[in-house]
Length: 263
Length: 324
Ligand SMILES: Cc1cc2nc3c(=O)[nH]c(=O)nc-3n(C[C@H](O)[C@H](O)[C@H](O)COP(=O)(O)OP(=O)(O)OC[C@H]3O[C@@H](n4cnc5c(N)ncnc54)[C@H](O)[C@@H]3O)c2cc1C
Image (tube, rainbow over all chains, first blue to last red; front, side):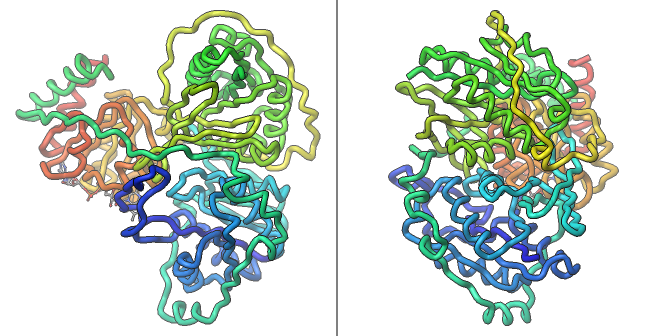
């Protein structure tokens, strides 16, 4: 079974976000890019499954421009075998459904039997693309998974069900699994890994190569339109309470009750 | 065009979740602004008829073995049937473990645009505008949906719940034509959380502890009792989780849970950008930190500069008194 890993580059989590002058996105000039943290769990799990004999090959799928190849190389250095980068001017401005169409076509073309992805990417924070891929391919799915067992044609996964409850779910492969923190401890690339990654192939595919209608993806096909981006309103200046522990504790409780009215 | 809104009302243990009333309140406002009607869909056994008092004119109920615990295939199919029956052009659900799978699937199945984790919804010139945080809340984006049906999930605690306006609903059994093929992913076991506290994402009060607690023992001795006294859910910074003081599920932040309580008390947490991203929308933030320069103070409504090992017990005493 070939294992596909959806991997995306995102601004490092300590990036101070600034909105561009047209309010259509963020300023990226001094952004440091990283592999989306949740995708690291997906990649790690894929490598471990292959090492445990549950997979034959680990293939990275990235929808992104040439700049994302640095992150793809990092993934290859950690242990993935090869990568498919999806890039076409027609892809620009795709919404989640458009992105899912592109990725689903590529995953299908490569004969992938198990897709691992991060539970969400920490830029758009949508977390919808993997479930959409599952739907488009007619596959099973489990999301926000922190334990995964593959046995023959079946997966068993522990997923966050909400309300602090976790559910153990099972289903048949092929499947799309989204990975949460706690699933594993991602490895870093080693020097031999980095050297080996230089020779691993990254194939670039466009809409024609994927056999998808360019009109079904990109800005024109997007059903969700982002109108304007803004920064959250600044919080009003707070108040520092003075005095010994007993005094500040009593004063805080009074303020929470009488001024803020939250208790 | 009138906005006909269908609200997916989730239940837990046979009871409607609080989010159902939150969403129906908002749906009623939005529908009134555009001259539309509100309906609801409920799975399993719950007091469906009571939703009439919260503004639903029709409640669609799917019941049977597929509607006890969540099964993606069956639930998506039933939601699709409810959308068709209600003629809704807007569907609202709470951002939850169910909707994070079911709504994207629905979106791809019926070609409906989806906006997840909205923190605000407003009617503007007959259209709905959703506002949602991106980059873990470091920015906000206003979103419009172009398709005939628009799907939205809303982060819990985004809207206040007012009094029920009153009214009654007709309850309609939903026949989604579920077959064995729709029981695609089965829940074989449910693992309940060790504590009875409300989940962080839905909690109205949270008390979080950081690395400064120094050990699991002192985390348990300081943070948990204070949370209990405040009737709050305990949370933690990533540093505290990675050090083993609290489980993964308790992590607040960009790579943990994004929370939206009315009160967030941070004990010995520096306020790293990734932590702030997870809790900055809290209505009131209290920071207790011995370093007056800690970034958390820039976000705090009330700050106490001092040793948490002295302040937390004093605060626990005061809160126990006040909330007895
Ligand atoms: C990819 C990535 C993702 C991340 N995601 C998250 C996330 O989701 N959530 C998260 O929280 N972090 C996250 N982090 C980590 C984040 O950068 C910080 O390291 C972390 O939040 C720090 O936790 P802390 O505040 O408990 O510890 P510290 O930053 O070490 O702060 C401890 C604070 O306690 C104070 N203190 C010490 N002793 C006392 C005392 N006796 N009384 C009072 N105050 C005291 C100190 O003054 C200090 O301010 C992430 C980092 C990365 C790289």
